[in-house]
Amino acid sequence: MPPIPTVTRAYMLACVGLFCAFYLLPPGFESLFALWPIASGQFMPWQPVTYAFLHGDVMHLFFNMLGLWMFGSELERLWGPRRYLQLLAAGALAAAGAQLVFTVLVGSLAPTVGASGALFGLLLAFAMVFPDRIIMPLFPPIPMKAKYFVALFGGLELLMGITGRSGIAHFAHLGGMLGAWLLIQHWRHSRRR
Image (cartoon, rainbow, N blue to C red):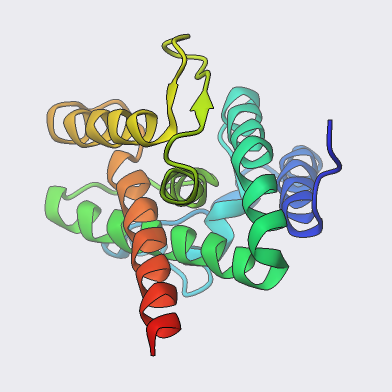
Protein backbone atom coordinates (compact mmCIF):
# COMPACT_ATOMS: atom_id res chain seq x y z
CA MET A 1 0.00 0.00 0.00
CA PRO A 2 1.61 3.30 -1.04
CA PRO A 3 1.97 6.00 1.61
CA ILE A 4 -0.94 8.40 1.98
CA PRO A 5 0.10 11.86 0.74
CA THR A 6 0.19 14.87 3.06
CA VAL A 7 -3.12 16.67 2.38
CA THR A 8 -5.13 13.46 2.11
CA ARG A 9 -3.65 12.20 5.38
CA ALA A 10 -4.26 15.53 7.14
CA TYR A 11 -7.89 15.66 5.97
CA MET A 12 -8.50 12.07 7.05
CA LEU A 13 -6.92 12.66 10.46
CA ALA A 14 -8.92 15.86 10.95
CA CYS A 15 -12.20 14.08 10.13
CA VAL A 16 -11.45 11.10 12.37
CA GLY A 17 -10.09 13.32 15.15
CA LEU A 18 -13.13 15.59 15.15
CA PHE A 19 -15.48 12.60 15.04
CA CYS A 20 -13.82 11.25 18.19
CA ALA A 21 -13.53 14.67 19.86
CA PHE A 22 -17.25 15.37 19.62
CA TYR A 23 -17.89 12.34 21.82
CA LEU A 24 -15.92 14.12 24.58
CA LEU A 25 -17.59 17.51 24.14
CA PRO A 26 -21.06 18.47 25.41
CA PRO A 27 -23.93 17.05 23.30
CA GLY A 28 -25.01 19.32 20.47
CA PHE A 29 -21.71 21.20 20.29
CA GLU A 30 -21.01 19.80 16.82
CA SER A 31 -24.22 21.39 15.52
CA LEU A 32 -22.39 24.75 15.55
CA PHE A 33 -20.21 23.39 12.75
CA ALA A 34 -22.79 21.51 10.65
CA LEU A 35 -24.15 23.24 7.54
CA TRP A 36 -27.55 24.59 8.54
CA PRO A 37 -30.03 25.93 5.98
CA ILE A 38 -30.18 29.72 5.92
CA ALA A 39 -33.87 29.72 6.92
CA SER A 40 -33.13 27.65 10.04
CA GLY A 41 -31.74 30.63 11.92
CA GLN A 42 -28.69 28.51 12.85
CA PHE A 43 -26.60 29.19 9.73
CA MET A 44 -23.16 30.66 10.43
CA PRO A 45 -20.58 31.86 7.86
CA TRP A 46 -17.97 29.22 8.76
CA GLN A 47 -20.32 26.28 8.20
CA PRO A 48 -19.74 25.92 4.39
CA VAL A 49 -16.21 24.85 5.36
CA THR A 50 -16.57 23.11 8.74
CA TYR A 51 -19.43 20.77 7.73
CA ALA A 52 -17.00 18.91 5.46
CA PHE A 53 -15.03 17.70 8.50
CA LEU A 54 -18.02 16.23 10.38
CA HIS A 55 -19.78 12.89 9.94
CA GLY A 56 -23.08 11.49 11.15
CA ASP A 57 -21.93 8.01 12.17
CA VAL A 58 -19.07 5.53 11.91
CA MET A 59 -20.17 4.12 8.52
CA HIS A 60 -20.51 7.61 7.03
CA LEU A 61 -16.99 8.40 8.22
CA PHE A 62 -15.57 5.05 7.09
CA PHE A 63 -16.86 5.18 3.53
CA ASN A 64 -15.86 8.81 3.04
CA MET A 65 -12.35 8.13 4.33
CA LEU A 66 -12.09 5.00 2.18
CA GLY A 67 -13.05 7.01 -0.92
CA LEU A 68 -10.70 9.81 0.02
CA TRP A 69 -7.85 7.32 0.35
CA MET A 70 -8.72 5.43 -2.86
CA PHE A 71 -9.23 8.39 -5.18
CA GLY A 72 -7.68 11.36 -3.42
CA SER A 73 -4.25 9.85 -2.79
CA GLU A 74 -3.57 9.29 -6.47
CA LEU A 75 -4.86 12.73 -7.47
CA GLU A 76 -2.69 14.40 -4.82
CA ARG A 77 0.38 12.53 -6.06
CA LEU A 78 -0.45 13.62 -9.61
CA TRP A 79 -1.28 17.30 -8.99
CA GLY A 80 0.63 18.04 -5.80
CA PRO A 81 -0.74 19.32 -2.50
CA ARG A 82 -1.65 22.85 -3.63
CA ARG A 83 -3.81 21.91 -6.61
CA TYR A 84 -5.27 18.97 -4.75
CA LEU A 85 -6.29 21.21 -1.85
CA GLN A 86 -7.93 23.56 -4.36
CA LEU A 87 -9.88 20.61 -5.75
CA LEU A 88 -11.05 19.51 -2.30
CA ALA A 89 -12.12 23.08 -1.48
CA ALA A 90 -13.95 23.47 -4.80
CA GLY A 91 -15.88 20.25 -4.22
CA ALA A 92 -16.75 21.02 -0.59
CA LEU A 93 -17.75 24.66 -1.21
CA ALA A 94 -19.78 23.91 -4.34
CA ALA A 95 -21.52 21.08 -2.46
CA ALA A 96 -22.36 23.49 0.36
CA GLY A 97 -23.72 26.03 -2.11
CA ALA A 98 -25.83 23.42 -3.89
CA GLN A 99 -27.20 22.14 -0.58
CA LEU A 100 -28.07 25.65 0.63
CA VAL A 101 -29.95 26.36 -2.61
CA PHE A 102 -31.71 22.99 -2.41
CA THR A 103 -32.85 23.58 1.18
CA VAL A 104 -34.30 26.95 0.18
CA LEU A 105 -36.21 25.37 -2.72
CA VAL A 106 -37.70 22.50 -0.70
CA GLY A 107 -38.01 24.29 2.63
CA SER A 108 -35.81 21.84 4.52
CA LEU A 109 -34.40 22.86 7.90
CA ALA A 110 -32.12 19.83 8.40
CA PRO A 111 -28.36 20.28 8.75
CA THR A 112 -25.76 18.68 6.47
CA VAL A 113 -22.46 17.07 7.46
CA GLY A 114 -19.76 15.07 5.72
CA ALA A 115 -16.87 15.06 3.29
CA SER A 116 -19.11 13.52 0.61
CA GLY A 117 -19.32 16.68 -1.51
CA ALA A 118 -15.53 16.92 -1.64
CA LEU A 119 -15.34 13.17 -2.28
CA PHE A 120 -17.75 13.34 -5.22
CA GLY A 121 -15.58 16.13 -6.62
CA LEU A 122 -12.60 13.77 -6.35
CA LEU A 123 -14.57 11.00 -8.07
CA LEU A 124 -15.35 13.25 -11.02
CA ALA A 125 -11.74 14.46 -11.21
CA PHE A 126 -10.49 10.87 -11.09
CA ALA A 127 -12.77 9.90 -13.98
CA MET A 128 -11.65 12.92 -16.00
CA VAL A 129 -7.96 12.13 -15.48
CA PHE A 130 -8.14 8.32 -15.60
CA PRO A 131 -11.34 7.62 -17.62
CA ASP A 132 -10.37 4.11 -18.68
CA ARG A 133 -8.96 2.95 -15.34
CA ILE A 134 -10.80 -0.17 -14.20
CA ILE A 135 -12.15 0.08 -10.67
CA MET A 136 -14.14 -2.36 -8.57
CA PRO A 137 -16.87 -0.56 -6.65
CA LEU A 138 -18.32 -2.11 -3.51
CA PHE A 139 -21.86 -1.61 -4.85
CA PRO A 140 -22.31 -3.15 -7.41
CA PRO A 141 -19.19 -5.37 -7.24
CA ILE A 142 -18.71 -5.26 -10.99
CA PRO A 143 -15.42 -4.07 -12.56
CA MET A 144 -16.00 -0.99 -14.68
CA LYS A 145 -14.14 1.92 -16.18
CA ALA A 146 -13.94 5.01 -13.98
CA LYS A 147 -15.87 7.14 -16.48
CA TYR A 148 -18.84 4.75 -16.40
CA PHE A 149 -18.70 4.34 -12.62
CA VAL A 150 -18.83 8.11 -12.08
CA ALA A 151 -21.55 8.60 -14.70
CA LEU A 152 -23.60 5.84 -13.02
CA PHE A 153 -23.09 7.36 -9.57
CA GLY A 154 -23.92 10.86 -10.82
CA GLY A 155 -27.08 9.60 -12.50
CA LEU A 156 -28.15 7.72 -9.37
CA GLU A 157 -27.55 10.81 -7.22
CA LEU A 158 -29.72 12.90 -9.53
CA LEU A 159 -32.47 10.27 -9.61
CA MET A 160 -32.45 9.76 -5.84
CA GLY A 161 -32.31 13.50 -5.25
CA ILE A 162 -35.38 14.11 -7.40
CA THR A 163 -37.46 11.15 -6.26
CA GLY A 164 -36.54 10.38 -2.68
CA ARG A 165 -36.35 11.71 0.84
CA SER A 166 -33.55 9.53 2.12
CA GLY A 167 -31.88 12.03 4.44
CA ILE A 168 -28.83 12.00 2.16
CA ALA A 169 -27.71 15.27 0.58
CA HIS A 170 -27.79 14.06 -3.04
CA PHE A 171 -27.67 17.56 -4.49
CA ALA A 172 -24.64 18.37 -2.34
CA HIS A 173 -22.91 15.39 -3.97
CA LEU A 174 -23.83 16.70 -7.41
CA GLY A 175 -22.67 20.16 -6.36
CA GLY A 176 -19.29 18.71 -5.39
CA MET A 177 -18.99 17.14 -8.83
CA LEU A 178 -19.90 20.44 -10.46
CA GLY A 179 -17.35 22.34 -8.38
CA ALA A 180 -14.56 19.94 -9.38
CA TRP A 181 -15.59 20.04 -13.05
CA LEU A 182 -15.58 23.85 -13.09
CA LEU A 183 -12.17 24.03 -11.43
CA ILE A 184 -10.64 21.50 -13.85
CA GLN A 185 -12.12 23.44 -16.80
CA HIS A 186 -10.56 26.60 -15.37
CA TRP A 187 -7.17 24.88 -15.09
CA ARG A 188 -7.40 23.60 -18.67
CA HIS A 189 -8.47 26.99 -20.01
CA SER A 190 -5.66 28.77 -18.12
CA ARG A 191 -3.09 26.34 -19.56
CA ARG A 192 -4.18 27.13 -23.13
CA ARG A 193 -3.46 30.84 -22.78
